[in-house]
Length: 387
Ligand code: GLA
Image 1: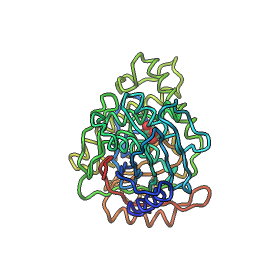
Image 2 (image 1 turned 120 degrees about the horizontal axis):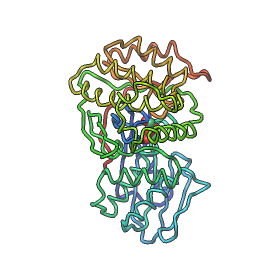
Image 3 (image 1 turned 90 degrees about the vertical axis):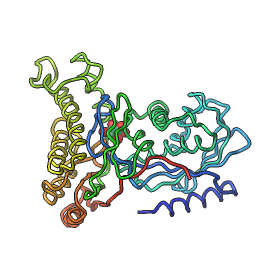
Image 4 (image 1 turned 180 degrees about the vertical axis):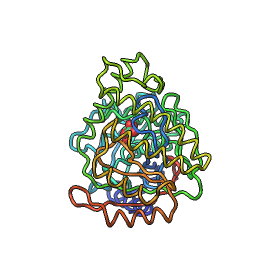
């Protein structure tokens, strides 16, 4: 994996080649891994992610005109340029830049006064793995402008909301608030219990004996967006049926018997969300108490719920979870993480068991296309910052 130092070198070189100068400020925002609480964020529920030590770096300096000029070090130095004085619209030729354009547009419409800037962007979050490289780009861009133009009033949680709005309304992806919140508010050596309704974030200390193992299945993710949107609609339909604002407001007891006039599929979707919310609160509690056996049980139940009720796992992912589960037993937890249909598995366990799991995966796992998995240990990290 590329280190942050290498990322910065690359971004510095692109900046120099493009603008014949060096950035005055750097912003760095992390990707994330979600320990538990999947597809609960857009149901006003709870999630328990941690920021990881892989992210996006943005180097920035002021311009004396009203242009924003961006170079993408990871896209063969592709460039984009737009004016702050004209309506900001989508770029067809540089889709990567729509995250930049979207955030700048949201900053302006929130009333923040900006001036022109040169930016260089580079990162080391594995692409397409479901580790929120796009949220980290949005948050890093927002932070870079905040630092450059002294937008002190812009709190981290507000930056997250603004970045989510850019993704929802400008890029056109209906994600929840989890990824942007953890990228903006993450805390080193902690996970964050986020209440996605109030946006209250409670740091949960990681027991010292646990490491975070991420295993990228390298399954090519298909249908992610359409299936994601379908799940959201099914959750909204279930909330409307039960007459609640969001599934967060439904009690587990209300779901004991499937009603005859609600499609069984919609019922199962609701059951996943409502039980997952409770598991997330229980997992935060188990982590706090250092109760690894309970954490193991909750993560396993979460995976089964995603497999059977929410139907977002794939056989390759289930296989990976089984391999890791056999190794760690009750001395760790493992589940699929992120939106689903491929992507990564996350495990929390001891260093020795994580190493053993990595060995077993290398021997026993191949994706449907024949690719081995990519396993790496990561460190719960701080949210966005500047240097
Ligand atoms: C994606 C979205 C998040 C969240 C997860 C599922 O990562 O961006 O908002 O909904 O899926 O938990």
